[in-house]
Length: 209
Image (tube, rainbow, N blue to C red):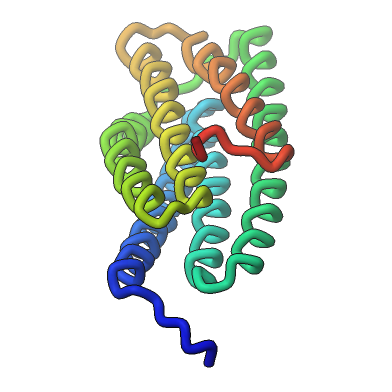
């Protein structure tokens, strides 16, 4: 034993951080299942892309849980963070390529997606839940002086942005019959996804400031 005790308030913050990440994993599991299933059934590229982003969020959340469990071991935490940033970066770039290809294909072929009530519901809920979750993560991150938690809060913010863009496209298609809205909404995601992917591959995060 090193004889170094961990303050009780820090232990409470770590427990809070773990609870937030467990909720993140559970919520994104639901998002992924509903979005990908509904997206494939409706032929919605942006909805499928949103579901795959949820899987990426789960990767990030799982890695942060690993780091939180090793809160007393900075070297192990740093190693996990660096590896995860790069894995997530590759996933984002693959997602950006997929969304671009499918959206351009649909615009050229005029392949319209069908209306998706489950997709509208899950993205609308995400628009509400994700900002609240991100704010809670930022509070814990600041209190722990944890760049990893702050970075994860930025990932959650990004999920909220995706939710709003995808929801807009789905509603435009459902209520106004704008067949191209889903593909255009998908293309709006690409710069955001690509930027996050490149930043992750460089081992950076704009959330750590």
